[in-house]
Length: 23
Image (cartoon, rainbow, N blue to C red; front, side):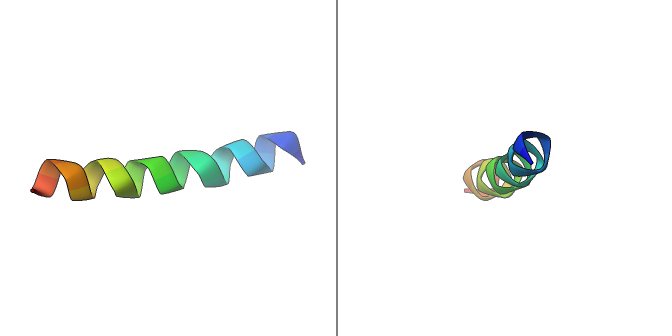
């Protein structure tokens, strides 16, 4: 379960990074 949570957090971080980079 921990690994799955980490994967979800990583995907959220990547989405956030992309938004930040886009700006």
